[in-house]
Image (cartoon, rainbow, N blue to C red; front, side):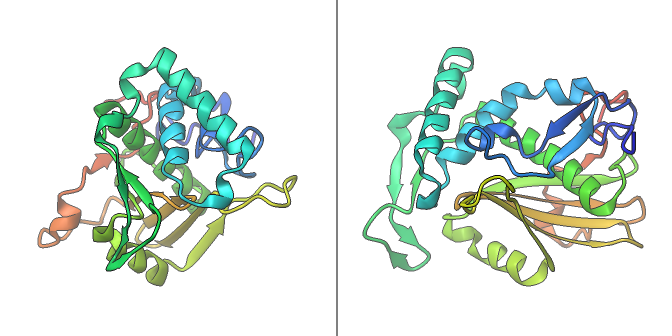
Length: 255
């Protein structure tokens, strides 16, 4: 009753369900973090189930935190892989492109710290979709209001082991003041499975976030209020895939 409108389609539809973002598929059964349920219409919630499964599989596959390699994690990963094989075979990784990664910055590790493989269009689509939903959800959680079509935003992703992204990761750690660590009250040894850093300026209606899944995938993005323009000299931001907010599947207007 306190959250009557869907936070993914700009509040254009009533919230009839609760959508867990990040998706439950990113975690072993029963390990999804508390307090990450968001008001959603059925279209925005159920319409991304395919993306939830595919993103969940890759977010776990690319997590190189050994503490998250429990029997429950392995069972979940195998289950997701089998579901994708049956329902979305085009999303399975091409193992012929798989290569171990031993280098971290200028250092070479004795064992692989990551795997490298060609990204398929279906994986890219799932990562983009969940990144956009996460941007809407975290904006709603931190700003206490709905991301609407009066806003512009982008969501992007990278793997933390990529040496070319270390500067960006360090920037997030140094500049984003607020750190939120996902946890579940019923699980004592929860592990480092999901956390995000964020920052905002209420008066300007500006929000930025970086969310990390274990020790692997990072989704990050930015939300701009109606009066904020992107500096045309900043090629990194100008080249991002900017969209109008409120672009969930239940949105009544095209994005």
